[in-house]
Amino acid sequence: VVVVVSNNRTITIDITEKVNTTQTKTLQKGYHYLSWSSNTPILSCDVTDIGLQEGDWVFKYDLKNETWLSYNVGLSGDIFEIKPYDCIFVGLSKIRVINIG
Image (cartoon, rainbow, N blue to C red):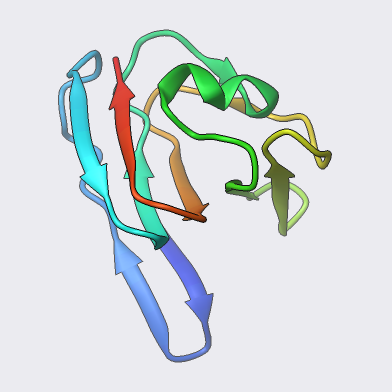
């Protein structure tokens, strides 16, 4: 899986990671890539369950429609499903402890 952020920056993500691996990470304010390692899908409007808070953003690239989906926690945006092996991009307004799985 390759995620293209701009014309000059790509990131390759190894999807051979075992699904249902618990991830607990302390992330600084800013933007971060995360792999969805849980067997259980989640909706973008429910990302407070993993530690995101109001004012944070979650993004996912829709390969079928070739567009970014985004949701601003506590406000509004696209409601989309995050499934096992998906890569999400989060924008954090403060330090957060994220727990996936």
